[in-house]
Image (cartoon, rainbow, N blue to C red; front, top):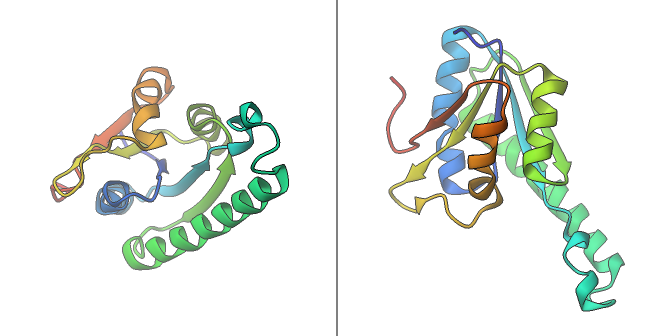
Length: 155
Protein backbone atom coordinates (compact mmCIF):
# COMPACT_ATOMS: atom_id res chain seq x y z
CA UNK A 1 0.00 0.00 0.00
CA UNK A 2 1.35 3.40 -0.96
CA UNK A 3 -0.52 6.16 0.88
CA UNK A 4 -1.17 9.42 -0.92
CA UNK A 5 -2.65 11.27 2.07
CA UNK A 6 -1.74 10.51 5.68
CA UNK A 7 -3.96 11.74 8.50
CA UNK A 8 -1.94 12.33 11.65
CA UNK A 9 -4.20 13.08 14.63
CA UNK A 10 -2.25 14.55 17.52
CA UNK A 11 -3.08 15.66 21.03
CA UNK A 12 0.32 17.40 21.23
CA UNK A 13 1.49 14.99 23.95
CA UNK A 14 5.16 13.96 24.01
CA UNK A 15 4.31 10.54 22.60
CA UNK A 16 2.20 11.97 19.84
CA UNK A 17 4.80 14.53 18.81
CA UNK A 18 7.56 11.90 18.96
CA UNK A 19 5.71 9.99 16.24
CA UNK A 20 6.44 12.85 13.79
CA UNK A 21 9.56 11.03 12.60
CA UNK A 22 7.39 8.11 11.45
CA UNK A 23 4.95 10.41 9.69
CA UNK A 24 7.80 12.19 7.91
CA UNK A 25 9.44 8.90 6.92
CA UNK A 26 6.20 7.65 5.34
CA UNK A 27 5.61 10.98 3.64
CA UNK A 28 9.12 11.00 2.16
CA UNK A 29 9.00 7.35 1.10
CA UNK A 30 5.67 7.61 -0.72
CA UNK A 31 5.51 11.32 -1.55
CA UNK A 32 2.34 11.48 0.54
CA UNK A 33 0.73 14.65 1.79
CA UNK A 34 0.12 14.93 5.53
CA UNK A 35 -2.90 16.32 7.33
CA UNK A 36 -1.98 17.07 10.94
CA UNK A 37 -5.20 17.15 13.01
CA UNK A 38 -5.91 18.44 16.50
CA UNK A 39 -9.39 17.88 17.91
CA UNK A 40 -10.34 20.06 20.87
CA UNK A 41 -13.08 18.61 23.04
CA UNK A 42 -16.08 20.92 23.40
CA UNK A 43 -15.97 21.70 27.12
CA UNK A 44 -19.46 23.19 27.07
CA UNK A 45 -20.77 19.63 26.76
CA UNK A 46 -19.39 18.81 30.21
CA UNK A 47 -20.51 21.78 32.30
CA UNK A 48 -24.34 21.94 32.27
CA UNK A 49 -24.38 19.89 35.47
CA UNK A 50 -22.58 22.73 37.25
CA UNK A 51 -25.21 25.33 36.47
CA UNK A 52 -23.73 28.55 35.18
CA UNK A 53 -20.24 28.05 36.60
CA UNK A 54 -17.94 28.58 34.89
CA UNK A 55 -19.90 30.88 32.69
CA UNK A 56 -20.33 29.96 29.01
CA UNK A 57 -18.29 33.05 28.08
CA UNK A 58 -15.33 31.89 30.18
CA UNK A 59 -15.46 28.46 28.53
CA UNK A 60 -15.78 29.99 25.08
CA UNK A 61 -12.76 32.24 25.69
CA UNK A 62 -10.73 29.29 26.96
CA UNK A 63 -11.71 27.13 23.99
CA UNK A 64 -10.74 29.88 21.55
CA UNK A 65 -7.39 30.16 23.32
CA UNK A 66 -6.92 26.37 23.15
CA UNK A 67 -7.61 26.27 19.41
CA UNK A 68 -5.18 29.13 18.74
CA UNK A 69 -2.52 27.66 21.04
CA UNK A 70 -2.87 24.23 19.40
CA UNK A 71 -2.42 25.74 15.94
CA UNK A 72 0.72 27.61 17.08
CA UNK A 73 2.20 24.46 18.64
CA UNK A 74 1.40 22.44 15.51
CA UNK A 75 3.13 25.03 13.34
CA UNK A 76 6.24 24.72 15.54
CA UNK A 77 6.19 20.92 15.23
CA UNK A 78 5.81 21.16 11.46
CA UNK A 79 8.68 23.62 11.12
CA UNK A 80 10.94 21.54 13.36
CA UNK A 81 10.01 17.92 12.53
CA UNK A 82 8.15 17.79 9.21
CA UNK A 83 10.22 19.99 6.90
CA UNK A 84 10.58 17.27 4.29
CA UNK A 85 6.86 16.61 3.81
CA UNK A 86 5.91 17.51 0.24
CA UNK A 87 2.49 18.81 1.22
CA UNK A 88 1.48 19.55 4.78
CA UNK A 89 -1.81 20.86 6.10
CA UNK A 90 -2.82 21.76 9.64
CA UNK A 91 -6.42 21.27 10.78
CA UNK A 92 -7.74 22.33 14.17
CA UNK A 93 -11.34 21.40 14.91
CA UNK A 94 -13.63 21.03 17.90
CA UNK A 95 -15.92 18.15 18.79
CA UNK A 96 -15.89 14.43 19.50
CA UNK A 97 -12.41 13.11 18.64
CA UNK A 98 -13.55 9.86 17.03
CA UNK A 99 -16.23 11.57 14.94
CA UNK A 100 -13.91 14.36 13.82
CA UNK A 101 -11.05 12.02 12.93
CA UNK A 102 -13.34 9.79 10.87
CA UNK A 103 -14.91 12.86 9.21
CA UNK A 104 -11.45 14.18 8.34
CA UNK A 105 -10.52 10.85 6.70
CA UNK A 106 -13.42 11.33 4.30
CA UNK A 107 -13.03 15.09 3.89
CA UNK A 108 -9.32 14.90 3.03
CA UNK A 109 -9.55 11.58 1.21
CA UNK A 110 -6.90 10.15 3.55
CA UNK A 111 -5.82 6.60 2.90
CA UNK A 112 -3.88 6.04 6.13
CA UNK A 113 -4.02 7.20 9.74
CA UNK A 114 -0.86 7.29 11.86
CA UNK A 115 -1.11 7.47 15.66
CA UNK A 116 1.42 7.08 18.48
CA UNK A 117 1.31 4.00 20.64
CA UNK A 118 3.49 4.23 23.71
CA UNK A 119 6.54 6.12 24.84
CA UNK A 120 9.26 5.10 27.34
CA UNK A 121 9.16 8.48 29.02
CA UNK A 122 5.41 8.69 29.45
CA UNK A 123 4.41 5.02 29.23
CA UNK A 124 1.23 4.15 27.43
CA UNK A 125 -0.53 7.17 26.01
CA UNK A 126 -3.10 7.06 28.81
CA UNK A 127 -5.52 9.71 29.89
CA UNK A 128 -5.51 11.74 26.71
CA UNK A 129 -8.53 11.99 24.47
CA UNK A 130 -6.55 10.45 21.63
CA UNK A 131 -5.58 7.42 23.71
CA UNK A 132 -9.17 6.90 24.76
CA UNK A 133 -10.34 7.25 21.15
CA UNK A 134 -7.63 5.06 19.61
CA UNK A 135 -9.47 1.75 20.02
CA UNK A 136 -12.59 3.12 18.38
CA UNK A 137 -10.59 4.69 15.58
CA UNK A 138 -8.81 1.41 14.86
CA UNK A 139 -12.11 -0.47 14.69
CA UNK A 140 -14.16 2.12 12.79
CA UNK A 141 -11.64 3.65 10.40
CA UNK A 142 -12.30 2.95 6.73
CA UNK A 143 -8.53 3.06 6.07
CA UNK A 144 -5.49 1.34 7.64
CA UNK A 145 -4.39 2.72 11.01
CA UNK A 146 -0.68 2.54 11.77
CA UNK A 147 0.12 2.63 15.49
CA UNK A 148 3.78 3.54 15.86
CA UNK A 149 6.12 3.27 18.80
CA UNK A 150 7.57 6.78 19.05
CA UNK A 151 10.67 5.43 20.83
CA UNK A 152 11.77 3.37 17.83
CA UNK A 153 13.19 5.01 14.72
CA UNK A 154 11.31 4.41 11.47
CA UNK A 155 12.47 1.42 9.44
